[in-house]
Image (cartoon, rainbow, N blue to C red; front, top):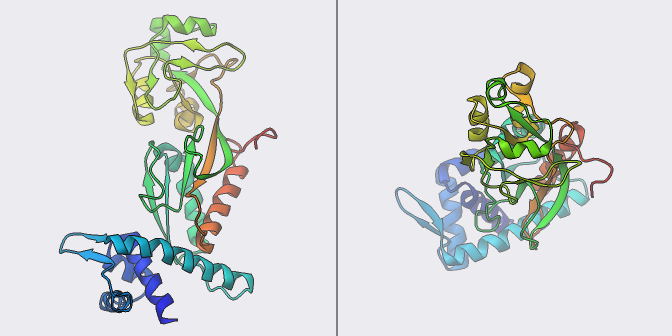
Length: 301
């Protein structure tokens, strides 16, 4: 069992990139963590970590062992779970999600999970770009839109219902579009990460090519631009729901809303899934399905 203990300590240090944070998570002193890593390195006959006063990184041998250790620890977790002897869930789960979805919904879901499993430490990376799950040592990702890399394991867990909005002041000055084709005469705010670019896909109408003088890769910047009367913006309804409720923004062309986008939970390919990771993923999936704004319709796969 010593080897399994050393492996768990090593994986935790590698995940957190810190001896002190790992000691907090494991409930050990920092010197105990250091001794276990030293014992593991003597057992293996190689260094698994490169340590300086300012940084900590895996050696090439450490990277290879990290992948094997993860699989071994996950297998132990799974074996214990099958006979009902697993202790309270503990350890680190690393995930990534878009910033505004996390702020609006996901962090609330995670808080509920941690109240039930306080020994789980979450490392959440927020990015609207698709991070590399393997290179960044991520257990899973929540992604909005179609999945480009089919090597990963993806499950559709919900839908991003989108909405077209503008500030009352903009519409008072530029007029309110009555049909989708009227959008061609308006200043439309572009989201740089949208795969269709300035070709807006609307329900019940052919796609419309729009134009405008403001573009950003940040949903928060799109919201700010719309609030400041720059033009008409499109994004997930969760981004604008408070502004719509207060009247700071109004919905444009409600009979032709922008096409919904799928939300997926994505895991790296060909790896065992630790019990703690599976538990959190199942919790997130259930939370998405319980939220009226996020849950998929009957047609969702």
